[in-house]
Image 1 (cartoon, rainbow, N blue to C red):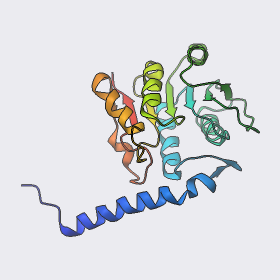
Image 2: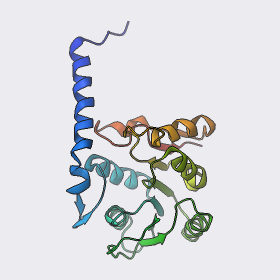
Image 3: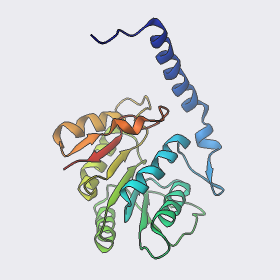
Image 4: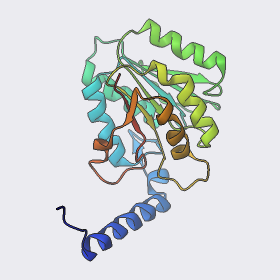
Length: 216
């Protein structure tokens, strides 16, 4: 018979949850996190996991929905460079409704300006994926309303290749009708995806149950 959780384990869980919320509320990830001097709105633990997933999947295209200053696109492009080497044509396609003021320049980054769910933008992203055949990974970090995230999932999930990931970011946030609601709505009707709980290995993540792996 499995052992019952002790009072100590419950206390530890409460402490962990409290730390997660305190860390998110601190905004240190928002105001004091940079890649090569460029701001990026990411949990450093998630960034470490991203490089592991990129090494595992070896994507030819990473689609980033939400650019901000371009720091995360810069990071992803550098990871592709490290993993694939100089001879690869692997690219990052990053989309935002507003272009960054001074975006970092990198041969692997393609900037697109417009809504991530605009039909014209979706068409351009799919064309880039078609021109660069190989594994595709998608990261969603734009408008966090459930309706918008759900539409991103619908528009882009078919680009994700077998074994790769559609990462829905900021599922840990307490927004009503936020990213987690979109994930909960998406998964029951798309059984070719699963929430990869092994991606919680570092415990502290902004994307709990948001690492959606394509399994068929």
